Image 1 (cartoon, helix red, strand yellow):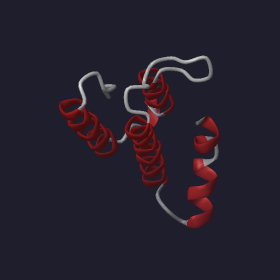
Image 2 (cartoon, rainbow, N blue to C red; image 1 turned 180 degrees about the vertical axis):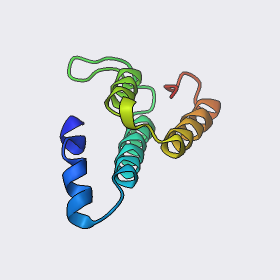
Image 3 (tube, rainbow, N blue to C red; image 1 turned 120 degrees about the horizontal axis):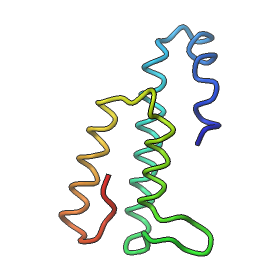
Image 4 (cartoon, rainbow, N blue to C red; image 1 turned 90 degrees about the vertical axis):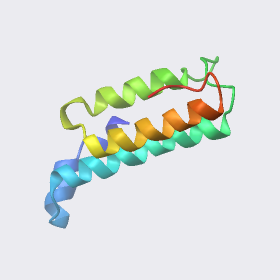
Length: 94
C-alpha cells in the first residue's frame, strides 16, 4: 500500500493537481478495493495461512493514511462496511 502513496507529492506536482485530492482518491480507491475483497470473500474474512484478516488490512490502510485522512473517503468506506454488516452478520467493520 505504501507504494501507492510514497510519491503522491511528485504525482500531484507533475499533473498540476492538489495533493490532498490525490491522497483522497488513493484512499478511497484502496478502501473500495478492500470492500470488494469483503464482497467476493464472503465469510472468509479471518486470517489465513496466506493473508491477514480483512479487519487487519483495513487497520493497516487507515494507518498508511493517518496523516492524510479524508473525511469524505472515510465516510464512504464507513457507510459501505456498515451496510454490508447489516446484510451479512460478522462482516468486517470499518
